[in-house]
Image 1: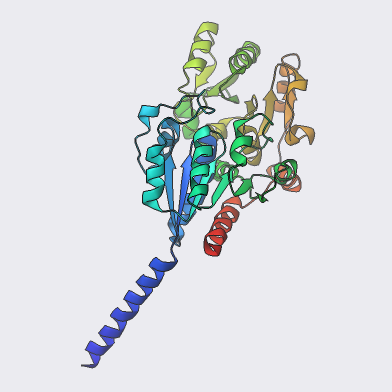
Image 2: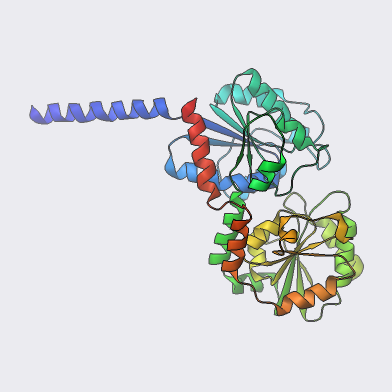
Length: 377
């Protein structure tokens, strides 16, 4: 009899705990469009999965965002995104078939929605959530302020609160809504990868033969092909140096392949095996046009160069503070010679970045801020 009473009490408390857990657990729904925001926020999702305190759900809006989630073997809401076929040039256009995303929101009943700030569809989703009185966080993943004419500025107006990667961006934006500097988790991902990766295995897979190695992080859009061609024209003069071209995750690398073939370059490897974060492990120098990869690589302790057709066309805090180099075609070979001879101190570099207001432990900060917003609701 005593055993039966004890068992009844245990069962009662289990059911009570289960009911309580169901009552307090809430749902966050992420809508990803670009590779940048997808890769930036995945560590937050993974932390939520481990803690299992609230339910975090992923919804890719584009084929390239979906592909990232598939490669990382993550669960997501697999809505049929193909009929709309968003392209690289469609981010400003109204989304033709928004109904299914509205239905998805109605079915999922999220307590909080998180969107990137790079497309018209994310603006429309934020507007729909406003009608439903669902609070929306807008996450900005870039380390340069958005231009006044960008789609990003339009989406920012529709969200309730903005999360940005640095204090510099926070002070630059002039908006009548809360803006929080929370960091960018992808820089932590780069650091962890560089601590654990097998450089020898990466070299072998990519068939890197020369000791000196440069990684060029690909991009896309107006002006990129001209920059790529000019970089390769100069880089072919670097003796006993291997060049890794790492295409942007949103592209298939066909542009890089075409240019390399046309220029008949033999010291260039087009990286299709590793993300840039991993391929850069074997690079002495990471070069980019204007990509976030520059900041990510600096956090991983790499020498970083921004390559532009003129020195006046681009600058950022890393360049202004001497953490990264800026070069044009005229100075390129001289800068390369200087950097190959220079040693980097990872610890000094990390301290400089921290002193500039770049935020460490951003995964923790973003997760706890989201939970705080959930629990206030």
